[in-house]
Length: 224
Image (cartoon, rainbow, N blue to C red; front, side, top):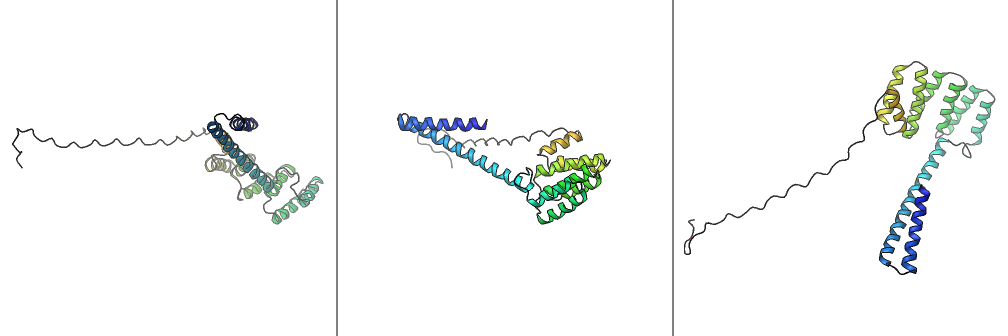
């Protein structure tokens, strides 16, 4: 849909320029419309570029894609994991994170190995608890917390399970993870906040009428 928007705006801009410059038709109107199309195109492009750069930066920091991002040290650790030496892989991942503290993925990988390869749910939960202490974007934090809730459920920790779900639903209420938490808790979705209404203008005060003087015959004055 965004491609169609770009194409439509570009076509409109071209038509306006052609009508104004070549056909000399309604130069003022077509010039204004062309300028409007150009401004909208520039705003859309700036927004899309900023979102793309932000997403690429986040992908680099969290190392989600794993293609052309992980360095050779991490690839060596993955080879150790493939060989089945899970404890050595965990040890190397901890050292890797100490060296590259922005690579939160290393901590997630440790938790994953504990959960899936060593079947140690308690250790995995402890790793996720440590991850949630890091400064993460709200969506990332929320989904890590949801995974920890699932571990609490498997560990038969209902108090921790419910407490964390409530925290997700209230402190991170605008995230998709919060919606999942509310579903698990059986909470209804919050109603959208009403838009503030402008106060009606105060009625204008009626102009004070001057006191009418009594009508007297000519030659008479009212008593002071």
